[in-house]
Length: 73
Ligand code: SF4
Ligand code: SF4
Image (cartoon, rainbow, N blue to C red; front, side, top):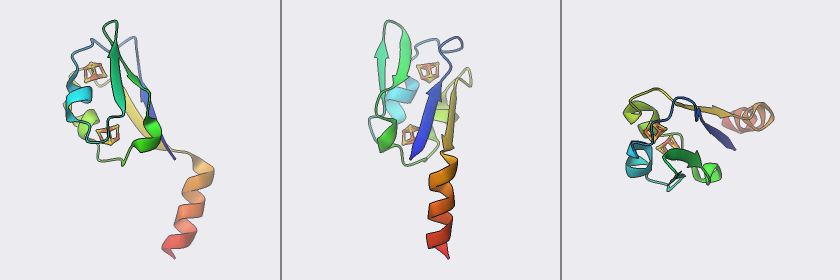
């Protein structure tokens, strides 16, 4: 499962990630973005590309990554 992390210290609440994410991962609350539905992330990287302050990072949990690699074959 993807892990989507917003650095709240960097986030300026511009809403770009909320606007560009095709999966509705983010909500904006009180001027900050939160990845409340990170399980929906398809790792398209649109949010990372559009964030003006480089506040978003995305990773895959190591164990599940290994499992998916096995299936790739
Ligand atoms: S990588 Fe794509 S799907 Fe995942 S949170 Fe960012 S915009 Fe949404
Ligand atoms: S695009 Fe970046 S700065 Fe803008 S709301 Fe999202 S995380 Fe915050």
